[in-house]
Length: 509
Image 1: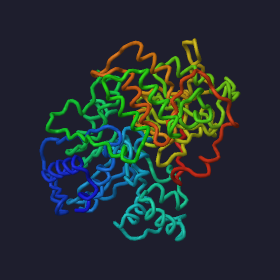
Image 2 (image 1 turned 90 degrees about the horizontal axis):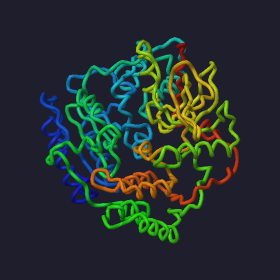
Image 3 (image 1 turned 135 degrees about the vertical axis):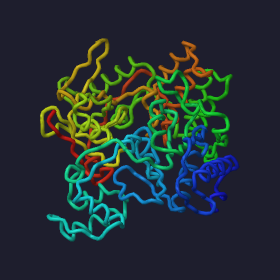
Image 4 (image 1 turned 120 degrees about the horizontal axis):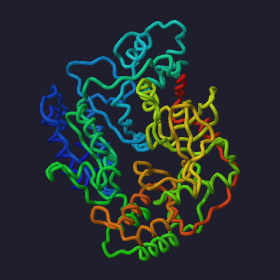
């Protein structure tokens, strides 16, 4: 196998341990052999390691090995006919942003919601999907030309996405997807990235679908708020966990990761760490010692804070400096999905919105009002099909006021908070090219002396915040805000959407 040439010793050990687990499930990676699934108890293994330890490389290489062995990768958009001897793999992440990070590295990841709930296709258009997947002859569909079908085939060969291919043929999602249903048929193998974000209920849902689960997680991150300071992989037996210790990206002289891993020193205090950040900023422009919050960055990359009051003040300052009216949103304002407010009788609409990326924590950009009162046109950051029109309830908190103001709202639908600043907890699973960390908040956490899972809370917060930056880290030390260089922009989102499909989720409630 060629993977051994690129693996470190700890990655090779992890690969062998996973191979052993899959061999027991009837998938032999060494010989490239697939056997029928075996009944039995769900097998779970966790690959843990800090940022830069090679978890993503290992996940990608395991995906390639499974694909080469003939395992079908399930993306959540269309699965085709079931085969008796079929073995399946799904690569999942808790958020759109986390899934998009994997997709940019060539790994066909999707969100957990897109696997828990599957689309129901109109039978006529299902024939096109089967043809694209090589499971049927080219169909004749009224209203679709030969040229349209050729465009669909070219799109599918390039992107391996059925919805994108049908969009290339001139169809909208509402033409061929008639609804969503809870998955009934189990799959074989689930790779779950950013597993530190999972709660126990999500793991139970995944256990129902996957007899073989492989969790990839960072033990230095923050545990989910409702998990009592524990991550799901910390409940596994020692024999079920493989920890990657070597930090590979440090070989490339990454100052951001150097700072993140320096936090493991138990003798390092907050003031010493800040001096380390300042020294790094003097010699490397990938770390910036910021005297103010840069407002231009806030539109696409939120400022990361610890305290909710800080978040609200920064959002208010962002809107004020852009001259945003209290009663309306400006095109280009960032929002964070805070959930979906729909009664049980509208369960289908809830699934529709969630499947299109509007899950709690999703980052979106407001593109303008929809065609109906209370609807918004939105770009869901990191989603495969990012353009959505949805009934929206936007709540914007104000400093020193208990109740948020609501610039406009549908009676029910997806709810949003402003996204110019977010808490570090909510930022987990996301990554941006440039990240601003509001250091005075972390200083406040250090002064309080709080400890979480045996480590000072400020260090966990700093680690998570720092590792959200892929190219440049701004360590902001003053409570100041710059002036914008110009008005908010959305032209780049319209010109270059993440995928060619524009789905609308409009309905009367």
